[in-house]
Length: 83
Image 1 (spheres, rainbow, N blue to C red):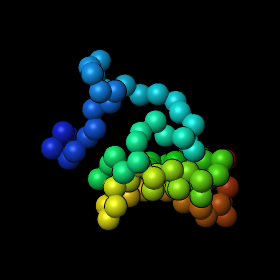
Image 2: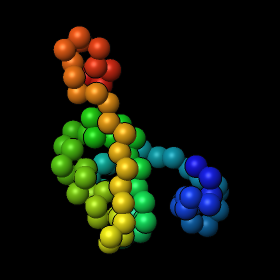
Image 3: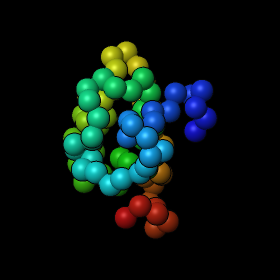
């Protein structure tokens, strides 16, 4: 994502951007840290989607926005990729 869109460089203090596996119900960020949160296929993979969304709301600044990419939940043809 381009820096002008507001990417948070993490961890603070250098080392560049890193990725990590974390508990989806305990994100390693303080309350109200982000203006925007993008959740890409997190809801269909979460053990407890409601708890995951509560945690997303916790790290989201008041009056800001969440965008989510969610796979199709129509499995009538058994092609749903997230099982």
